[in-house]
Image 1 (cartoon, rainbow, N blue to C red):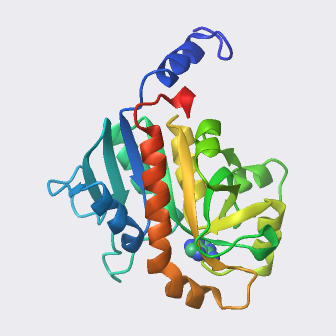
Image 2 (cartoon, helix red, strand yellow; image 1 turned 135 degrees about the horizontal axis):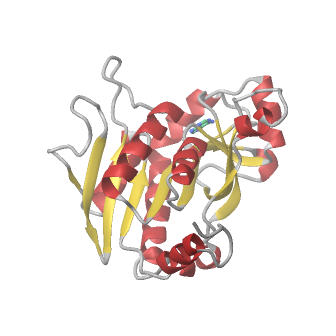
Length: 263
Ligand code: ADE
């Protein structure tokens, strides 16, 4: 086998793929309220003859928009409790299953997030994450500590950033909406501007299966502000989905007709 690295067979295949126009994108969204405006915008249709295993709540919407095949996958409602299946476990499972079934060229993980006034954020700001990491996987043993943090870079999109009016910042992921003092310390260590419950899990699976991924996060709550997070999140969720929908549409319009190396 040829050695990996610059000039290797594998590197040349990746280079080649980066020069083909993007034809299939996969949007992964955790909550129905976040997903529906985007489903409607692109006139996506629900897959009634599911691609996924029988009995799972995962929902796929699909359709064509300009030159792109769009699949949007939402982990659906918890079968027992009836609430959105938010968090890293559902996100990684649907990401894995959707990549296997749909072989997308690019993943967009879109959703809402908390942000921080120390980072200059306001409600409805939309961030494109430069890096993603976890803030609730503490393993204080050398090297396992780094595995726990799971820092990964998003696919680099310098032209998209030049063109669109998005904020850039690091994204930190954990399975809680609130924030313990230990998590706060990890979020500061991660230098995060945005805090969500799925991004780093999607990044882990995308990296495993070598699919480029980007992360678009719209701010529903200011974690270091005066209001309790859950109250502020619920109060702003519906309104902020409009900002998310607009940003996702702009990103999809920018992607259309381009190859990965042009993003
Ligand atoms: N999604 C929206 N707000 C959030 C927060 N503060 N933490 C985690 N996920 C979120």
